[in-house]
Length: 430
Image (cartoon, rainbow, N blue to C red):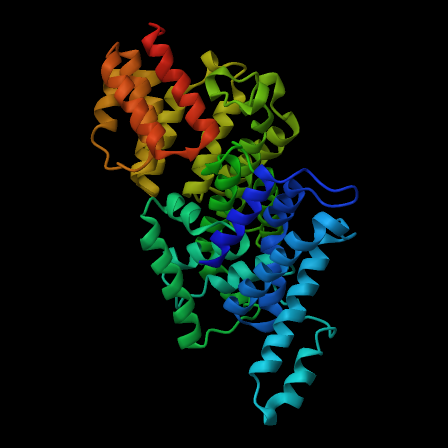
């Protein structure tokens, strides 16, 4: 897909090109604009033209034009506005060329009607509207989520495949089929009616969490955190909470994001190295975000309509209550994971529960649970297993498990952390 080539071009220039000319934009700035503005630009063009492929192709052409011009001319005052305007003009030119003579005059009138007021409807934000639009019930839920991650998060096929724990070829086919289904079924790109919103909520929540997760622990690259994705997911979750304040799972998702984001500054050390939860300096945690997240958790508890996002938020609220790692109420966390397994079971939830079990019943009990899971491609499973084996003194097996984890992660910061843990085994640091 074309976005892979564009991302590769931006990354190659970021790594190899001179920083900038006297007045030009640096390659790093170009890459940052892409990461920050891709979703906004696609949402604006899909709203304008109602065609996903046209929007993506013209946005990508606009970014490639920026790659050519900005290092010489410097970035415009509004980079996002420049990208959207350039892409919109390319889309207009393309549609004009493709229109028949009989349709050309009417097409020109339609294309130049873009300054008319846009109907806001129930959803007041372009990107949130596009998320709800992509989450149309005619598409299977996995396709809804994958397509929206592509359009709003600007994630590559590789990154989305990693989030779904499926091969890249499988995800590429899923995206192609989803777009074909939209075209064949004539699914409209319009603001859903207010009555339609609750029925589309489940995939919308899944999309927002996956965007946040990719920002919180990037699946690839040389940074652990992609802050722009975390910030965008939180912003959209806040809008959703304003739109649907009576939905406890919406509040639970927002609480979960806030509680996780409160730890963000403490998750990296000098040079951007990874700092695991147990070793973090909790004085660096954002107490305002913690207070807001915990307040939302309490509001959810009063409603007594538990769901997986509320339970995950409650688990992270327990972590936030502990002054240090040793004070964590692991028994309560295990109980919350038990509840989550009853509400929304899954192998990743079971893996997280096993981590908590290790703190209550010991690493041997947890290892038995981990060895019963089917997550061969999930690097975190191998990393958890390696740590449990390390604690049990099974050094050779732990080293092999660390190697398996290293081979399965695309993030260089995580790789370096895992390499250091494996090296510690050789030095006898058990």
